[in-house]
Image (tube, rainbow, N blue to C red; front, side, top):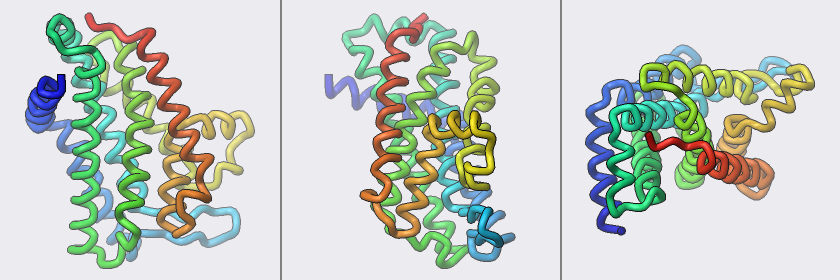
Length: 247
């Protein structure tokens, strides 16, 4: 089974690299956003100008785009596989469904790390000091966040009708999550009902956790966000097992 997992992982890696939208969305676009906004803001971060404004952290925005790009790529590939009958054929092999889906997740997590590495290299080259953060902890926070958001991707991939609509539907679900994540303004400024929705989204807890790592408060101070990300993952994986269609 392990041998099959690595073979499938290698195949999925090549598929990902041949998908221009996935490479651009997961790797190139976050770096471009990071460099352009970082240069325009001077230091990669726009500090708060009043007590009711949140500081805008460009590296965290770029990290979120890495995660969202990975999810959109996952949704697109699974939808294409289902529509083309590839998922049905894979399920007929000795590989278990867990192995098949785990290979997809593993590839996306690997490219999440690659994307973060590109951000670090870009920061050192073009924005010195912009990625001044404890990198192992920030990487772990981004991986946990990506894993949680990926679980939503499986739910989306389970309900999209065709591969043609996979990317638009995925984007319609995910990008509004970034808008209400607390990255651009405090959640307290949202209507109460929308605050409840925001606190149920993984992007909100991802921003809080990565911001805490960035500010040096550490994991212990954000255990609620960690638990929330794990809970979202568990709920979405459970839901996906109920509604996921292989054909």
